[in-house]
Image (cartoon, rainbow, N blue to C red):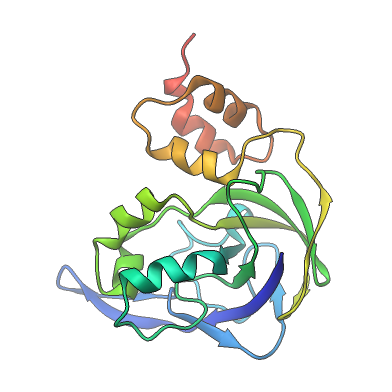
Length: 212
């Protein structure tokens, strides 16, 4: 896996339910390295810090593998890297293989996989189609957020070097699927609850589905 684009966003205004709002989801490639900090990416825009940024969502990675699929879905859009609001577009990132808790060295930063991205209406604003939320969930390849273990700089071409594989087998794709299934597979749910890298508030949300 390696970084093929570093992306930064500026605040963009839009009207939602009759009110003017702002979003930082409109991210575009930048030629320089970006700095991964403990709670965000330097110079990036985060409007809603309740749902974005912070320790467990400091930086968002999305795979270039999925771009062809979405280009077919939305051929009339002006495409570039960063379309999904990702700070790092990564070639070779496969959510079915990447484990929650894996630790990677990227450039001079060290990061740990924490959780998949859950789409909200602002992704629909970016694609000019709220129908993408359902499509995004069904497609099942959401990219991943990471926490920053060591702050540092990342630039185009940097490889994701696996420093430590999680001892828990839960993958990003399994985590994502678990969130939306009405019937939660108990074996996957057990991995989820036992994984030390899954944010506690996510465990609290799904604890009710455990069968005693």
